[in-house]
Image 1 (tube, rainbow, N blue to C red):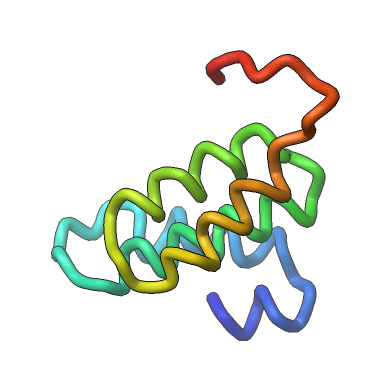
Image 2: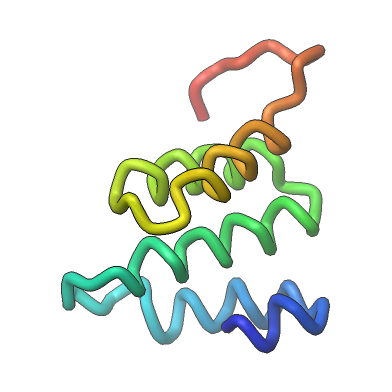
Length: 86
């Protein structure tokens, strides 16, 4: 997922998350890290509302990369738009 994300293949990042992580019930720090990668890919593809929601979930799931998840959430929320629940 990281390779796809950082090479700019955001569609593959999202698909990889759904195929490899979404149904995995193992509790580890990798769950929120992968969720944040998906959120970043969604942000880059223009789905800012869902990206903000997923960044907030990743923030709440773990202290790992909490600042990064907060910043991702902050960038995803457009201040000029109404902040309605998804």
